[in-house]
Image (cartoon, rainbow over all chains, first blue to last red; front, side, top):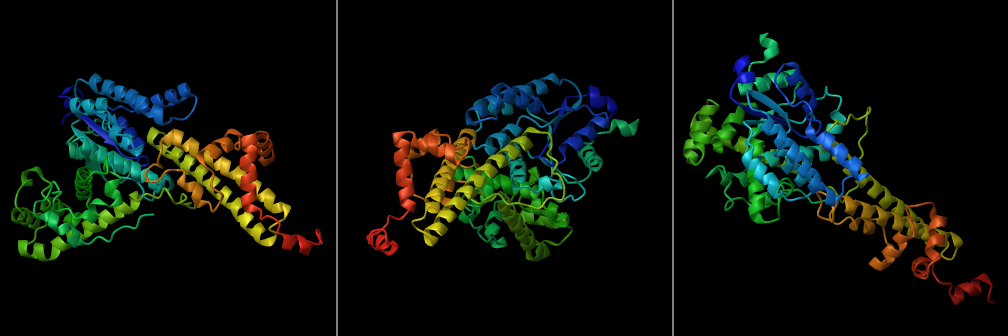
Amino acid sequence: MSITEVTCGPVRRYVITGGPSAGKEAVIEAVVKAGLPCSADEAARNIYRAHRARLGRHLQVGDRREYSREVLAAFVAEYTAHTAGVRFYNRGIPDGYGWDRFFGLEPYPELEEANRTYRYDTILVLDPLDRFEDEQDVVWAKEREIRRVHELIVQGYYDAGYAPVFVPADDAESRLDFICANLRLARPSIEE
Amino acid sequence: MTALPALTAEDLRPLLRRGLPADGAVIAEPLLTLPGVTARATTTERASRVTAFDTLLRSLLARFADQRLAEAARTLFGMPADLAGTTLTVRREAAAAACAREAHHFRKHLEPRILAQLAQALAADSDRLLAVAVSAPALLPADGPAVLPAEVFAWEVAEHAEHLSRLWAHVYALRAELLACQRLASMDPHGADLRTAAERALWATGRLHGAVADYRRAYGELLLHGQVAPDVLVALAGWAPALPTGEVDVVCQHGPDVGDVRTFLRRLTAHPQGRAVHTRWVAAFVAPRTTEHTDQSGAAA
């Protein structure tokens, strides 16, 4: 795919996802640095901070559904705002399935509906870095619950009807090379 | 902690006949009770566990560790769209071709290896997802500060770990007080120290029940990823007199989580109900003086 197609061609939406400590932020940074259109910020972060600030405490059982709906609305807005060319997303709508499952909640109707309506072209799951000894966050990545979140996110994407592409643990640049090769995508920063 | 069932290649062999999607009629029951399956299923119904098993199998095949056999493994199970629904013979021949082997050699030597590796991967996955909620969180030595990624999943996982750590801290605090009661009951069953230890145990019980209530407000009636209610942890601390729900409420209403043990006892015994709970609790630990004992001490002689 040429650079022109990357920015002006048919709409293509690619999700980069994975559990915490999958090295997602580093890959997103590499995508942005390569000049590929990308949602650098994870929308849920600011919504979460604002939600907690509004409540004045941590989220409780009764708050989680409302929070999920706010995040879903942000993901849908991010999805519909994109109208031409390629775009990478920092997590996608089906991440909501993994979130709900982590807290023992059933998927809710709006999530199911959004999943049917707003479909991504490719899901890229970053394998955990827990065996990638050069990463400084390896200690945290070895936490059992972190791995559980990762697996529940993967399950969520299968439940949503996707067959994810698994990106092996490696440094961010090599993972971007893998992603671009898999998507047959030119890296603008390399072509220039 | 639930013991993991031992998995072998033979447990997976029946799945080869039809390939994917995994046929619920031939999936061996132990496979559907794997922690990695139950953790992914949305309900405890068999149909939901079959779906979860199918998904798990697909994701393990997609991440098959042995790269020399990865494509053959996926082909054997009919993962590529053009092989879905084909016979085992067709898939086996395609799988043999994918790793450049003759079909007979593949069936005799490589197929068992693929199934064994898959069984191993299923067991490893289940070990990772095994519910450990009724064991105290494992402590690992840290060489340096753990870097928490700036994202919501990580924050929530960390916060849940905080809740669990506090919960278990209170379990062990109560356990220490109950052990002190046992020791003192053995050393000096009528001494003042035993009475003080029993009062401290009541205070620790109230604090633990407070932590349980906090957990339930945050995460609901069961420990996340376990099948037990957080209240179960109270019993793990050791033997203590049973406190009916009403009495737990009385103890918790008098602020065991605020101040020290003296403040808590002053508040508790200022009310008739609290006084009754306190008296009954302490009496359960402190043995009543017998006539024989009184005679031995000389007080009544």
